[in-house]
Image (cartoon, rainbow, N blue to C red):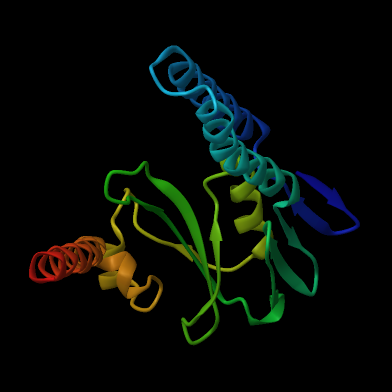
Length: 196
């Protein structure tokens, strides 16, 4: 985090980035070693290694490129493949929540709202130091609310409608629908092959 002439620039927490990188590298090395030690042909080792190298490289690039910039005129959220800009004058409220996903770790999120309580920008804050996010909220100078404990998306939507999408509020329905489609395709293929 740095401040230049009234501009607040937040970068992801280096410790969190290093933990991700080390965990991903260890997992990749162990799996490639298991391929080499097992009965699989050695030609699969570089394929598996490449399979893990791509997300690791994307993660590193995202870490290097990601930042939140707050100027006197706007708030900018920059990621690997996107950049969102919103006028700072439209920011009227911030909702800060720790969202719990099924089978996932809780993730801090800021929802930046306008005067009508419509969502201007969603800031995934999990990769940033908590003190930096505190500074961002203080620098915005608008009321900040939100649940005082980790909540799931459905619970957050009851208090703050419109902040989270339908798929986030119903992750199990999406999973069952996908499983149903896959099962229907498999059953269709089996039926066609039996009848042919």
